[in-house]
Image 1: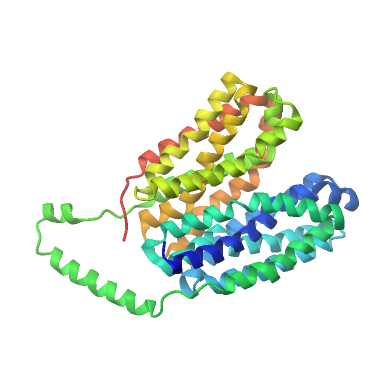
Image 2 (image 1 turned 180 degrees about the vertical axis):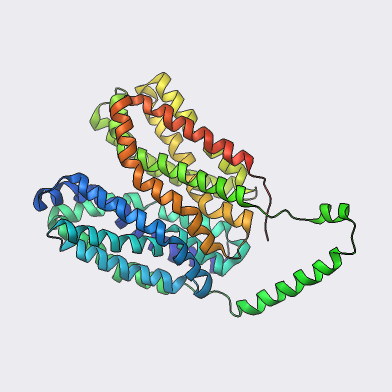
Amino acid sequence: MTQHVYRVVSVVGLAQIVSYAAANYLPAVIATPASNELGFSSTTIFAGFSLSLAIAGLCGPFMGKLVDRIGGRPVLILSNLIFASGFTLLGFSQNLLVLLTAYAIIGLGMAAGLFEVAFASIVRIFGKNSRNAITGVSLLAGFASVAGWTLSVYVAQRYGWRGVCWFWAGMHVLVALPLNALLPPPPAAPQLKNQELARADSSESRHSTELTSDEQGKQANPKPGISTTLLLAFVFAASAFIGMGLMSHLPRLLENLGVPLAVAFTVGALVGPAQIIGRILDFLFLGRLHPLIGTRLAALAHPISAVALLIIGAPFAAAAVVLHGLGNGILIISRGTLPLALFGAQGYGQRQGWLMMPSRFAQAASPFVFGLALTAWGENVLWLTCALGLSIFVALCLIPATRKA
């Protein structure tokens, strides 16, 4: 990567650490103390988190379209201001209405400030050559779990659950916003480039009328259709359901398999480092291949780990968690690289918003649905996630490995 790419990756990646650390990992830290003080079940805190995910899904296409029009820097800066407002209000919550309003605002911040907009911002700058930058940002953002748990628990122990909400509000204003402000604007005169592309397409179209139908078939680059879009949306939604469900209930699942609870938390913590290693492996060994190849391999990681864990049991717990994390790390990268490879850079932001909308809804429902299944079936819930993982692999095999410029 060039120095310019390193700068963009560093700026966006570090800002994404703040965004994900606050958005995804705060609820688990504040759920018990906040619910005790406010007088309702801790489930309500997670219901607020689910609300924020749903709002992020609904607003995602609009935010993506905004990036396509004006670039990512103003949208990401706006997200930091929205996040700061939401976390500030969350810290002042005195009743359920204020808490849910705060989470609704945080959901709007998620729509404007997480991976979908970050990836779209990179594509607006680098176009079709964005894959390495997307991988780099995903790699840096993988440290959000470490930052989120460590800092949130540390601040909460000293200043309470309200203090940690205000801490992340301050981090958005004082750290993430200045970082996003350093993001360079997209290349100038995109309209001129579009006009040039249109003239080239027109010229090519006139030339194609002089070719035989057989010659046209040989030269044509098939455009991915609605089936590819639906398959991708399913892949992202199903992988998000598995990832969020395991993130919410992994210690309890491992305990059902015979792992002592204290050890289960330690083993479960291996998911974060394994995801980072998966992203490093993708960057080092899979970068020159079509992203579908690496994604297909990654999709098999969870089914293999789930079946082995069910057969072998507790002795395989650590290896299963690491294998799942390796695959999930690459699957998260594919949310940015697959749409770019299959559809191209034109309209990338809005397309990302639509593709990721089902994923947000799946994430919102996953903790509740996965929890019910775990209660009813115990460790056999892994057969469900295994089937979903295999369906992801099949869906990816049905997508042709075409490339768009």
